[in-house]
Image 1 (spheres, helix red, strand yellow):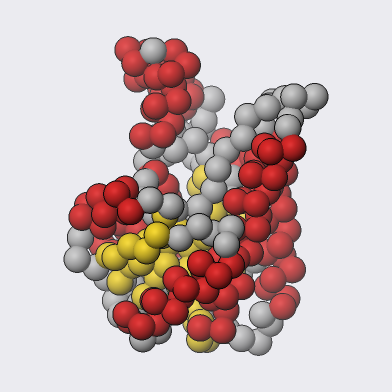
Image 2 (cartoon, rainbow, N blue to C red):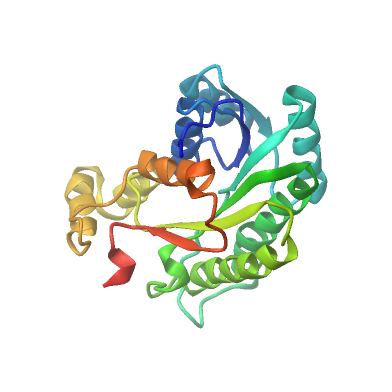
Length: 253
């Protein structure tokens, strides 16, 4: 079975940076035509230029069902069909119990749970047998760090949604899986470390984050891309409903 995605059309939400950008780049490199979504035109334009001619962008908010409906209408208008969806858009939330606000709760679950639903649901009528959906989860679904109960709870929620959804689509030939990264070496991670510890401390902080991992390092965004390509290719044709931890073994020890 091949990992090549020649002729396939894919949508990747939150594709302008970080893990989403790494996934979109790998899809394009494997021959897919990729449509990425994000909240702002400027970063989208930059990402499209980086990924290359097999990529285009659409500004959309995954928490707005009408906007996601419009995305898929535009995808069909541009390309005629849809083969793969990667529900990547998400936000983090860091607050310990007794300091969690109503706004933090609403934003986290709106983007990370409702946003996934509104990415998946309108895509289903467009996907044919062999179509795939990959939901980006997190190791926090089973190992939420202190202060990240909202984020971990939201990722656990979408993981359980997928358990139900594979039964709802039974017989359709559509596969739905969860890809759960651990720590990934993204620009946003490095910015957060710089704010917390200073710019000079970032390389050492990144190395330290990988020390407890069986691989001895954290992941590159491209490694999330190769895993998402696998779950979206014929090579995984009998895999559905799984949560694939792409974390260097971190959540398994």
